[in-house]
Image (cartoon, rainbow, N blue to C red; front, top):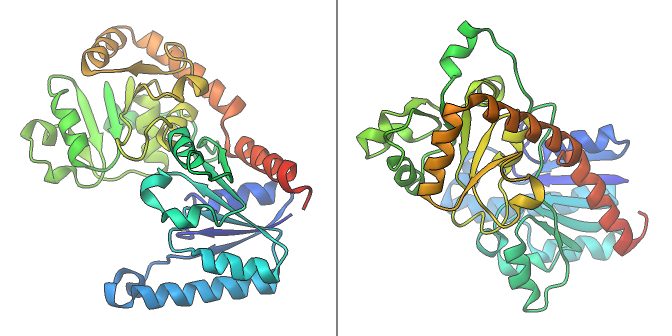
Length: 330
């Protein structure tokens, strides 16, 4: 099939670019169309609307010129129902959306039903949308990319800057700061943007560095005893975030708040550690810091499960199967 991947940014390793690379490896034809781009016209309120209109016209022309079998939109808040309708009137194509956040909060409601299929990790959102008659929804969890998410082996000296009894990699938000205040008496190290501005002195004392990517992030995940994954309270209602799959594919022993969908993806106590409240979180931390061999075994189990069931290729195969079942072979 011919796929046009419509994504926010064309950056190596980012969501959307990984779809392109995986589809090409599977024998498909694929091209990329970034709708956001890094420039002042998008970021300036006075020019943003005009810039988005220009982008939509370019997208329409790209579809008419290349005539893809499938237009796969990643997130795609600026992609309007109007441009989807105009393209579909002139090109025999399907519009799919892979939405990695909460669609009830992060995309205009009227945009959801414009797609032939709308893929979401949030069954809560599916139930809410289906209750008002929306029928183009498909549950599809997030994923790992083994080329980018994998264990790394480091010497003791090389691992030292990245090793922590308890690690977290992610940006600062107020709710996260409040969470880490409750762990002030634990050996937590945090990497990510914005943490130097934390109000709490105890949280600022946990900060080990700024944002991490690539091998540095993998080094933290691979060498720390426990890796925390407290989900976003608005983005992850019952679904599971991308960090869950990245940690698993890195062989980390993940400690996550228990979401409804998590046990279907990783077995609690065997492939992931879970908690429902702070008291349970403390019990998990206390036990597994005292038994690091058991923590490492859980990380290895998670790695095996991630590679067996939760790679991007697995998700694409399911996506293609869903398309063919509903619309036939393209």
